[in-house]
Image (cartoon, rainbow, N blue to C red):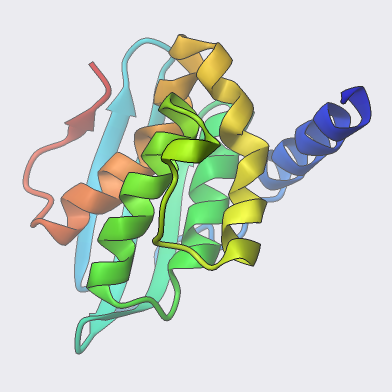
Length: 153
């Protein structure tokens, strides 16, 4: 089990140090800002939608390795997804980090979901759940209009 935990930590640190899809794209159809006042994480999620499909997903922000890694992995997985799939993915990811794997039905293909399993350990640390879910809540707000800043409090 410790080898698996070490692998998970390596993946989180890799995404935290070299986040994928970092920056504001040229074309944005929706965006939202998120903030975790407890630890200071901030994130802005940028999405480019075309005919109900996420064509591009990027982010900017600063924060702990878990927050940045979660945003990085989320943006990788969202590309090419229909809005209905994105909603199901949000629910399944939220269950992953707050419940357990048994509560994680649908929304991802198994390979995508396995990538996110590295974040499942945060459920043992309730304060870190907010770090892992900040980008996801901010993405959901962007899809709903993103007028107000998302906060984890």
